[in-house]
Amino acid sequence: MKFVDLQSQFAAYEPEIRREIEEVLQGAQFILGPKGSELEGKLAAYVGAKHAIGCSSGTDALLLALMAYGVKAGDEIVTSPFTFIATAEMIALVGATPVFVDIDPATYNIGAAGIEEAITKNTRGIIAVSLYGQCPEMEAFLSVAGEYGLFVIEDGAQSFGAERNGRRSCGWPHVGATSFFPSKPLGCYGDGGMLFTSDDGLAGQIRGLRNHGQWERYQHRVIGINGRLDELQAAVLLGKFPRFPDEVSARAYMGARYSDRLGDVVGVPAVSPGNTHVFAQYTIRTPRRDDLVAHLRENGVPTAVHYPIPLHLQEAFRGLGYEKGDFPESEAAAREVVSLPMSAFLSEADQDEVIRQVRRFFGK
Ligand SMILES: Cc1ncc(COP(=O)(O)O)c(C=O)c1O
Image (cartoon, rainbow, N blue to C red; front, side):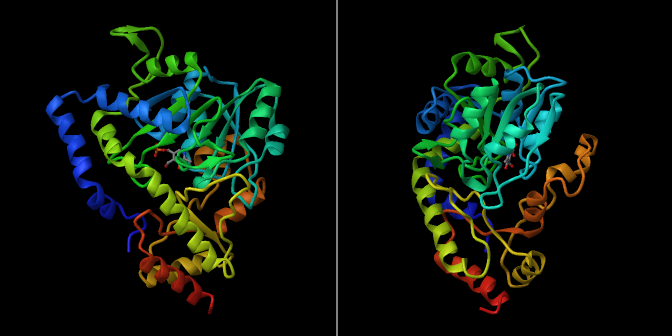
């Protein structure tokens, strides 16, 4: 059994993916070409944003958004300590300070009340993480941001395809960032990412920043990065995208099926009112997590822990001065969560086996 079944997905889409790749090979334009533009147009329409800008990874998408806002040393960005390192890593990389607020244990996302308490005169923005595949309370974040003059970046690396109150993840003001890492809901065959915004000025700024700070060839107005999405990755994504809406439905079905059959033995994901969940990770929780992981491993069920150490306790962030106990909900989640096999190509038979093994561990 696979944790994420990319082989079955390739088998299902092989002709489309090969055709798209072949066109790139024949055209021999590998960087900033027609496939990237076509993908940007399609995905902008899908999320409901005016602009989409392909970039080299989800991490670089966050970096480019922070650079476009001119975030610098002395600035503070409020975010979650219970996320993948990239979220806070990019804040630190531009010289700013990540300011963490604890998560809501029901959704694993931060809430607007916590954000408001963390705001100081140095706060410039919020990175709202849509962890595991559902958006946080974006409307409330935007209202706090409006009151204090802050920007909101949605880290939608895990939530591409999710909706909240009719709006798609990454389509919220002010800017959305996603990842096409192979195991993500929409994944390429290497690294890739995309930024979405309806702000013309910000989109223009990001386009130049991702290409060495140049808007005209060899005229470098600002310091940028090599942060482009390459044409082969765009081709893979174009080959997969037509079936993506079906995959989103399949993931929701499999997620609901897990929750229905496991809800009496472990904590299952709570989907907030108004939200759909893409289950980039289908993550359960139990105080007996480590023993459950060992049992599942012994019985051929792959699992992963997202994430075992909250960011405020990571060695790389020691300099921020946080201590154990500062964010108890994030620390408890880090001890108790485990993600189960999930993809649109997970068979019901394999899922039944995962369910059987989890229940067996609890003697049910
Ligand atoms: C929440 C979150 N943010 C950012 C990233 C970074 O994306 P990438 O791996 O494409 O750089 C990831 C992906 O691993 C993620 O899960």
